[in-house]
Length: 253
Image (tube, rainbow, N blue to C red):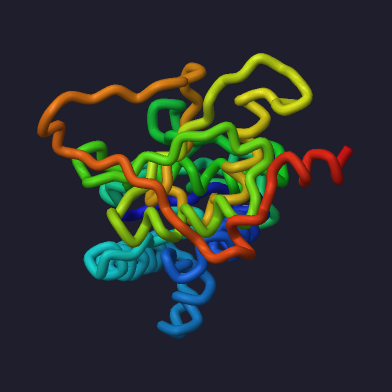
């Protein structure tokens, strides 16, 4: 998968990439324009030099993507035709800087139409890296891939749930975490939306491997013969089994 993060110098491209890398760790390879120029010892910023740099960035991104990792590509990418040729799976435009301190770049930078990108970040927000991780995850997730369902209230999510998730990932490549939508009471102090936001922050490193959705207040799962899936109860050691969401809520209160 290729993710292109482009925009003027000083817009925050590298900062965003570093934060995404911190979350998704070795699932992503951060390809930075300055580092690529340093490795090539090529500081030619003429139009010809910029196209040469574009080719280096594209070749590196394709190699990373072909290896099965996520190529997180961070450079100005000033030409519209270059952005089209890059053919990214996810394109993010950092639009916060209109005029950079480099006049030669200002002259050639072709401001994109809204149809040219998937995501526009104008003002930096601490939630942006997490949201980008899930935007990446949406594009990785495949409904046809064998998947384990985890259904619960998660009020709150705790270490026992983490252990259950690990067990689920041993059974299939993907896990669908489903949040039951409950009426508010002392056992359900958080809305399904609040739980989802919490889990998106907690599990952003697994975006695309884990998917998170709210569902109705499901109270029964009924099946017939030979349905093609199993319903299993997992057993854990006493330390995990003794973790109680009720006690956690009481201690929090």
